[in-house]
Image (cartoon, rainbow, N blue to C red):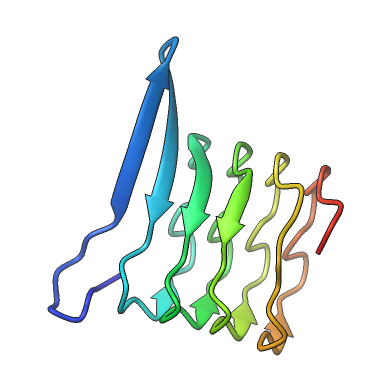
Length: 117
């Protein structure tokens, strides 16, 4: 993931309560794609913010992020990869923009608490 000036920065805010670390991740503006497996099995991730420049969420990007509760997905996203949110057990709601034209197989498989799309 690169920013327009060529540097690679992901902004991570963490909170440590009783030795449990929770990560709130903000992808930098200028990023156009979240690469396959980028955050796979990062169980500490609780929230994710994607900028308006992101158009593609790759395969298995958030697979296994069992504590992911919210994702602020840009309205520019047009593609969500296969297994992208697999096993995101704490994700209850996700807003998918009408601009999304492709959702991969099993993108939301085993999202047992997902009640609103």
